[in-house]
Amino acid sequence: MSEKRIKVWVQRFKDRPSLVLQWLDPETGKRKSKSAETDDEKKAEEKRADLEADLNAGRHKETSRMSWERFRALFEAEYVEGSRKGTQLNYEDTFDSFERLCSPTSLRAVNERTISRFVAEMRKVPCRGRSGMMASTIKVRLQFLHTALNWAAEQKFIPAVPKFPAIKVPKKKPQPIPTESFERMYEKAQDQQMQAYLLCGWLGGLRMREAALLEWDATDEAPYLDLRRNRMILPAGFVKGVEDQWVPLDPVLKEALLQLTRHGRKVFRFLASDGHEITPDALSDRVSRLAKLAGVKLTMHSLRKGFGCRYAGKVPAQVLQKLMRHSSIKTTMDYYANVDDAVEEAVLGPKPSSERQRNSLRNSDSWTVETHSGIDDATPFPDFDSARS
Image (cartoon, rainbow, N blue to C red; front, side, top):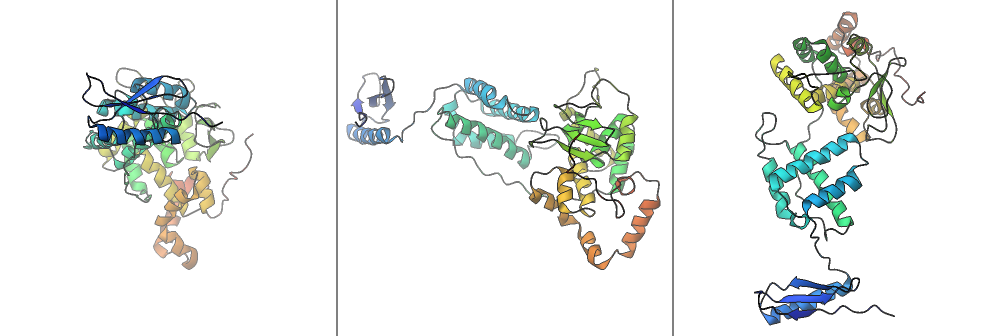
């Protein structure tokens, strides 16, 4: 037996300027109403026929009356709660920015115009000395907001996800970092703890937050040191992957870390002037100020990229991928765009100047990676695929 067909009729109310389309919900039996947005009976009849056809074909979905505040609470409890801490913070930052810049009152009020205004306002927000957010930051914020609205559509809270604008982010190839630039920044640090922190990016390839949260002993919630095996472990519960990751612990980095005074389980404990521990974001600002003081343009992110560029001329792509912990080899290959000298030397042999520089580095007392990393022509790279004991 076929389902009962939904009938739509036109209703006029004395207190309303427009005619109203009404029908009975087949699931609840309750009366539903929708404005015809006209007082012309002929136009209202056309809209009635269209709506009736859409309802019976399953094409019509009502917009949720849910408040934005209620939606955010549901999304964070049911979707975000099981994510990594870093992901949760990204959603929190995105929602806070969206609410501050656009003040959404209800979920159904979020449309293409709202998203466009959000982008425009983010381009005006002062951010670390700039007049607006970087395109890459804006793109990330939109990605998190799009995921949230996509979930809303899946839960039938909204009929469809609004169209999002495309944000073009200039793609910059990773560039080698001159040793001299890092040394200038390192010397300006003076503080032993800050110097060790910078070495985590320069000699370990750790990201800003990974280094800031580094711990002495094994844990499932943060990166930690395995001093016995000379490794820095990033557990699966912390990283984006489904399994633990690790990188070799450079001897110079290890020595710098062991010289630090221990304060509980965390390796680093940076304090503000009032004595409270600062956040990773505040620590990033300190690094930026330090770089400015040294007259160089370096961040923990660029130190990590410099780490990858140094090894790109020394190891195969699959080894560099493991070392940088990239999920895609395509990302890793970007680091090979700046190793022209290494490509030439692979076929033609080392250039005289390059050979002299290499010998000079190997014979010097410098602590740079060329001397101490253990990765050179005579030393095989550690077995990344060995099982974790």
